[in-house]
Image (cartoon, rainbow, N blue to C red; front, side):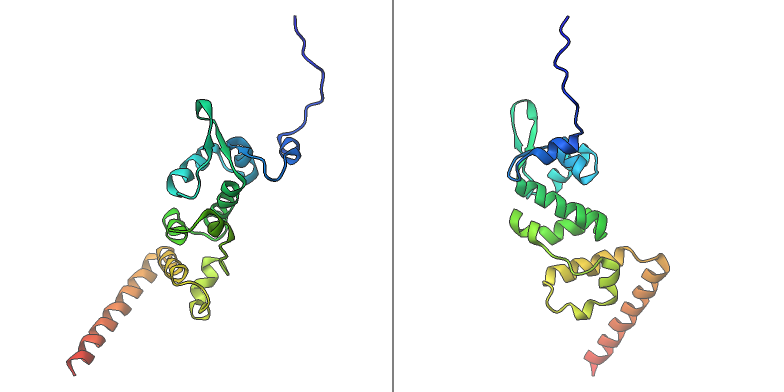
Length: 163
């Protein structure tokens, strides 16, 4: 009966740390690094065109360093900045992998919604996404109040144009 070699087992993290910075990562390594399930990464592949892992025989995925950087940014946008999938998609639409990885959001949405005017140096698409994402997070009473304000403003605009 074959007993195998008696080598000390190391954790997956130790094995991952042994890889060169430019080495490809498996889906399990990236999922462990981001602390998400593997199916989440496969889902993100369908939602973010910038994530295209290399697929080898049997469908095994290998993520390039650029893919891992994009996944880190997507994770940050969704879990730290509070964006929805749709909001994050709007934000990265048309950007390359490197542009997504380098994307900087100045503050979490809660802070941005209170301070939108001071973001003159933020791109218009970021401002628009922040606005729409913030509105979706409002309580029903706040949304109703905003609808009333918009209605009043529309009425005022109509009155002004009649003059």
